Length: 307
Image 1 (tube, rainbow, N blue to C red):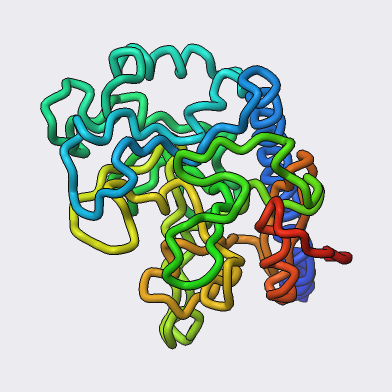
Image 2 (image 1 turned 30 degrees about the vertical axis):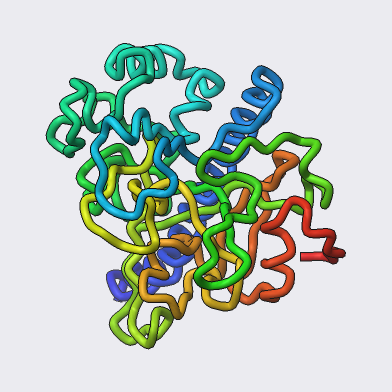
């Protein structure tokens, strides 16, 4: 009888314990985003511009290219390292890439980028870029086992097929605070990107389950296959295009490569996002598509209500 009572009590307490743990993980995730926000703001204070999503020296290329054509390829996560108390790592990356002049996947300058030749720094695990609720560890095993990031900048597009990004941060962008005419509190800066695989019954991606693969903090990998949706580097390693249209919603997409490009989260009911003013908000999966579209652009002139 006593054992049965204990079993019942455990069954009652377990959900509460799990909820408390998830609340703690969600709080840490929120703190990570706040620290990243400070990193962006301090970078802007120093350089008078926000860092781009990544540096792509061959933005018109539409096929695998030599790493000598796509020099550097470092992402925003690398650029804000000095403002996240990671100056030694930032300097180490500089040394390994010959003062940031060589592709991080081809530090020897052979002309061909490869995962085996990538700099060792790229496999560093940084807790500031990891959501504790995400099921994968600090190494992104879905993306050639480099250091994982659960946070991507919001690049956005106007409509499916558009190549011009309309978000605050995108490849080779040079946005400043003065460009955010819609207000920094109404403009998305960073969103979450999980590594969660949806249940087999899900139909969120073209009638099938979405498979999310997170991102990388170091920067985008050099492309190894021809495709119309990338230009020499895999931009979805560091940015998403969510909110640009009904094709790219939170954790749902009708595009062929949608689950690679959309924002997603391991949290129940939505995701945490970093706004341009450094505040962290929780966006519901049920957010109005119009509202979502309005907050991804820094200068669209839309009137944004409560969200």
